Picture 1 (cartoon, one colour):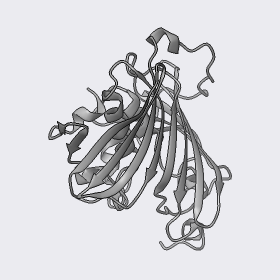
Picture 2 (cartoon, helix red, strand yellow; picture 1 turned 30 degrees about the vertical axis):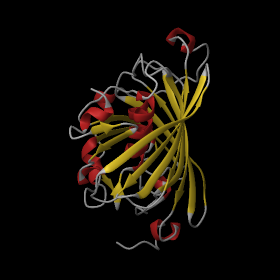
Picture 3 (cartoon, one colour; picture 1 turned 90 degrees about the vertical axis):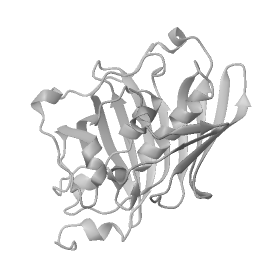
Picture 4 (tube, helix red, strand yellow; picture 1 turned 60 degrees about the vertical axis):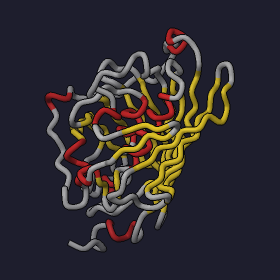
Length: 273
């Protein structure tokens, strides 16, 4: 099953795919940004069957609401090898997200990895306990099976902002381009250093696909390494690497987040209980 298959009410008219995302995909106040960006990637890929998604660069606008989503994909460049597809995501005529998706038109065997970074050592997923989200703030936790297996745990005031976990989507989907984008958008990487959660909506996210996931989807669950590179009072930068269960590097991502209310609200001694 593909990521788009989770939304049975979707329809397509011309360049536009329309669907509803239920509220149980909410992350804080709006629909999970990685999900919306992942769906945009899969909609773009559908415009060029057989081409491989290489990168997704998404910019997020306002918080989404209960309305239907319209994904409009327009090819900006149709080169012999490189193709660029712009996707505009709207609700009731208001822009929620824009994304540029880079695709490569080449035989799948051309994407075979000659070199790729190895996955870090970790316990197998069946020996790792599921991390339970606070569903009051993060209903999307019902759709993400997160099993920490290294690094530091969130909200433990650890010394280093690094997390390692097995990640799966519920219900299970093939790890195609869209699912890889979704699984690259995890909790803020600075969370291990905090005592209480802060809202950190993504403003910009770029995901580079390191494997050809259209013809050879990744095997789940995926191993995700999440590191925070820098955090200021109101902004934070995260870097994520994703390997499938066979040890194949499938994605690397970087995203910029806005820290709503400032980082001090999550620091021990300053946070509300």
